[in-house]
Amino acid sequence: MIDQVVNIAAVTVLGVLEQAYFSLQVIYARRKYSVSPPSTSGPPEFERVFRAQANCSEYFPIFITILWVTGLFFSQAIASLCGLLYLYGRLMYFQGYSESAHGRLAPLYFSAKVLWVMIGLSAVGVLNSMCQLYLGLDTLQYLSDYNSRIAALGLEGPPTLSLSGHAFTFLEGCWVTSNPQESSKSRSLLNRLRQKEQALEEENNALKLHLEVLMDMLTESIVQLQGQQQQRGEGRRPLP
Image (cartoon, rainbow, N blue to C red; front, side):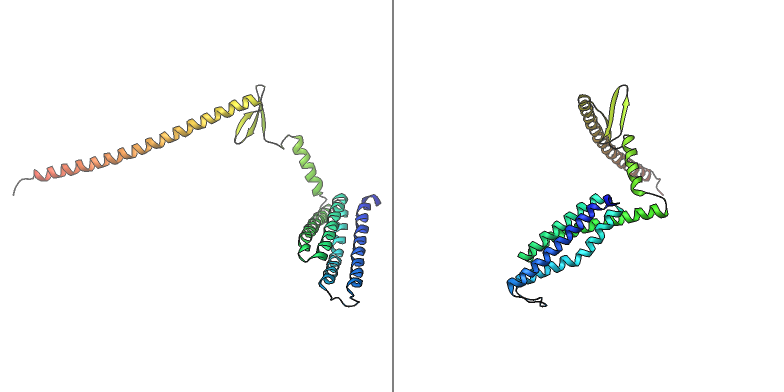
């Protein structure tokens, strides 16, 4: 049991030491800028240090809770790594905020992203444990086994085929040989066929256009012929 949480415990102790360091910095700032407790206002330099320590303390309980939940229900190694990244981001945040208000932004965003990742991992771990407990289904193990089965069947990459001693791979919508020389020949042949297909399609479109023009001319000729026949019929009528 101890070997499953020792890394998380180490990160927890490191986090406590970091909080103690931040508190000592506030004490030094009070002495430096002559701000006696319980006053929390003073020069901007002191207020930045005080606010940086307060912000880190506000998020520390959330961090510790998520750290242990992630380590217990998901992965101790990943939880420890994320914990170290979070503590590093908080240290950069404290130092940047102590120098200027703008210097806190980048470390703040970084530590917030790490914390959200840990929250997501902890949620996945708790959900998986609940599925194991109530449904008898280990979703993480199932996904791991599924990826192993996919790799064993050779379905990770593009589909392959072997015919008459030649290996073919389905790439970019066509089957190409694994041999580079044959593959280049196949590609060149495919390009020529595509060019011929495009030329035939253009020729077919031109023929369709010519056919439409001829049909229009034929229709117009038929209309003119019918008009002439009608005029001749009217000219041949007997006089009353």
